[in-house]
Structure formats: structure tokens, C-alpha cells
Image (cartoon, rainbow, N blue to C red; front, side, top):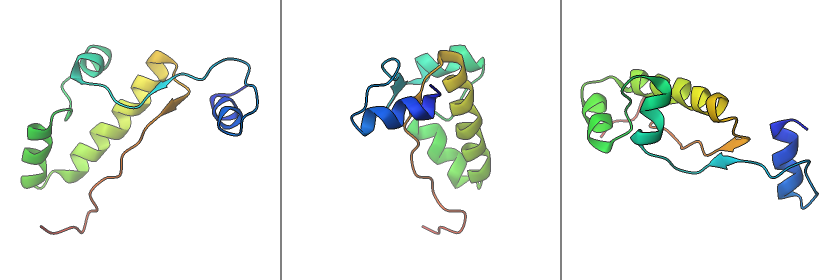
Length: 90
């Protein structure tokens, strides 16, 4: 089964080939060693980057980081949070 098939089987109460793996939340201590770089994993760094108008940089960092983490740990599922819209004003 693919990861998608495994997760869909599980949430529809069918038996998958194995228990799906994944994470709902994790901290910088999990992310930074795998990616080998800093992230916008803490609230202050994220807010500071948004205030400086670097929203797209933050979102791109999150997207590429999630893909790399998922591939590294071979997760089947991961929670993806909603992001602030480009046109949002405070």
C-alpha cells in the first residue's frame, strides 16, 4: 500500500498493511538535526519574519521542511496547518 492508501484504509475502518505513522506536532529538536538548518519553528522567529514582510519565505521554509521530514522519517501522514494569506492585513 502507498501511504495515502494506508491512511485512507485506516480512517474508513479497513485494515491497512501496517499501522500508518506520522506526527501531529514536533519541535525544533526534531526538525533542525534532520534539515541541518534553522527553521521558523518558534513563534518569535515566525512573527518577526512576518513583521518584516517575509511571509513567503516562512511558508516556503515550512513546505520544504515538511516534505523533507516526511521523507526522512518515512511518515504516512502529517498535519499541515493553515497559513496566513498573502493579502492579510493586521
